[in-house]
Amino acid sequence: MQYRISAVAAIHEKALRLKSNDSSSAGHVVNLASNDCERFLLATAFGSYIIWAPLLSIVILVLGCVGIGWSFVAGFGLLVFLFIPMQLFLSKKFSTLRSSISMITDKRVTLTSQAASGVRVMKMQGWENNFEDRIAAIRAKETDQIQLVNWYRARNEALFFVANIVSAAVIFAVHVGSGGTLTSRNVFSTLVLLNLAQIELTKCLSLGVMVSLPCLSRGSYIVYMHIDLTTVLLLLS
Image (cartoon, rainbow, N blue to C red):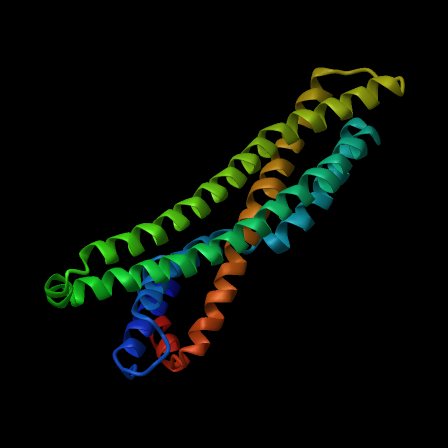
């Protein structure tokens, strides 16, 4: 929260000093302060999983091998080498689409603010329908991109619920096929470890990648705006 408030305050402080001929549009600045700074909250919550999730996966693998045997490696490998790359691919698509949506949103907010500030001229010249059509076209394009993001998000959630079941089925099948017997202790301990690995690797890690990359890209824009980083440090202190 402190990073978000500091970033918004720094953007506001710089926006007051922008020149009229600056290339930064009003929509871009508004979208940056209202939507993208909100990702600092998610980045601080899930960004650390980029480091901790691989370390925790090693611990889970060791505990699984001790609990049920080497058959745990089969299901865990399926989770790591099949589901995790698919999740990371979807996370990368999320980041790409979010960047494109942000650019479209910037154009829509800029055009809407221009129409609101110049409403008298627009009414005198009879440009209402022209502005309405342009805003509606940009909004339709933005909606299409949002629907595509929701399509990828639905696949991401489907993988989240499928990964645990498929991995557990593979582990139990390999364990029984190799001559082992299933006990309540093996079953429940395996399910607990898989649930933990599933949440850490297929949910928290993907969210960490998804929110950290946009923060880095928006951070480059903050540097582009030449915001005084001393202001941010003073606000954080």
